[in-house]
Amino acid sequence: MASLGVRLPDNLDKRLRDLAKRTHRSKSHYVIEALEEYLIINEETLQTIAKYEEDKRNGRLKTVSLDEIKAQYDLD
Image 1 (spheres, helix red, strand yellow):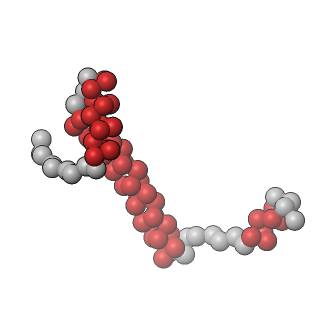
Image 2 (tube, rainbow, N blue to C red):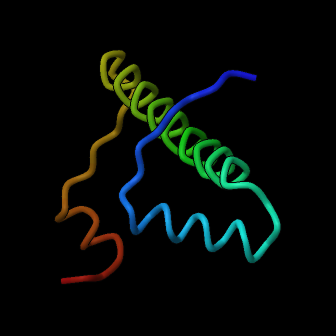
């Protein structure tokens, strides 16, 4: 397993330390858990953006005007 040094603001370190102490888990456990979740979310976001850009380049996007949406849902 690789190692990574991170400088945390004092208030974040205190919260992390308190959580680790209350749950009898290591601070590393929570940092790894949080980083995994962050990466999943951001990787999915980047994949979605890439798919959108590809569809846009290839003319596969259907645009709808605000007036069309209002008419479709009777929002006048």
